[in-house]
Image (cartoon, rainbow, N blue to C red; front, top):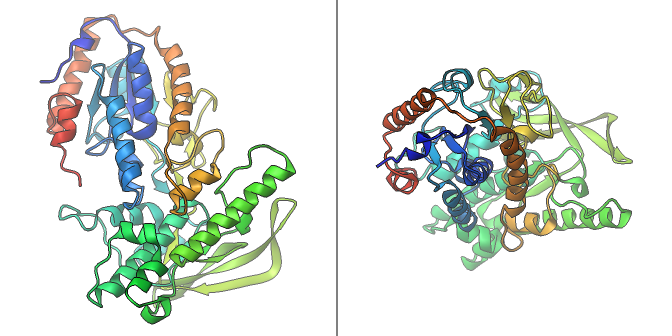
Length: 447
């Protein structure tokens, strides 16, 4: 039974677009301060990139994060409306003008792949060009009988353009799929988690095989800067000693990835041109760079051609365009990057990755795309465990500032609250969900 009693008295009511890490943490904080929260989630479950963007070998991390999200959203003041897409099922204008909500918070993350910076490159999508988010979504779900998304044939020797933790995950996906296929042809089944934990050479040696025997070339990860510049570990302070330690940690992490997962690596290369054959993308040409005093500059006349059976773009994610939300370049247009206020839209805020444009749960606002070395090691499979505690604390701090602004905006008119009740019932009916949060999660059919 859906309990709507929190709306029977004068309260502030806030819509949060997106559940997952940022949305659930903000919802929890607001609900605990007496705000009624509508979490508007486009998916069947409010897990965002934890479910769709984190490779499936991170099972323990995924389960732990699911639990944190569930604990945050299981509150009588929170109503989660799944299968509800902003711009299709509901608009910002409807939420602010028709429902007269106290505030709208954009916590929908960064799901759109940043295109490779090559003129005309998008013409090769589906013809040799793939992007990170769609690839990871496929990898996580393609073995499920209910999966109905795009399918990809992973090619050995794929070219991965990127350089962060997500790019390493993409390169690992390529090599895992190629190795599993080679072993399957020999009647050997290997689980992805086992490959990730033990590493490719160890698994192959257990079956008296090696990379040469199965003909593995391995994915090639190409980064525009040096290995020691990769966004894998942040210095603890601004001292030269701290920077040197961070650079050493980055090199250590990447070399361990190369050793354990047989990922190849090329540095100081920026993509500039497509290599086409027979209407398909067959590689890229790169400008060779140098790094001087931390600044990247091209080396005149030095162009490198790298041929590959498939190219995977992994240079970051950006927020999806939303009807009614102004943009500035790749991001939404914020009047204040501190509070997240959207320019020209009173009481509409951004939160989490929609502010930073970082499409990864491992990123935080304060350290941009860099995180502690020990967490990075855990996430790429060469260290211990990892969690998102720091990010949750930062989200909570920002959500608290939004709550301070929102608490005075109480909905006193019973007619306004009745319209919100009707909207909740309508979306629950449309998404075929009923009851409280726990029963809704139990009813979901996502794999």
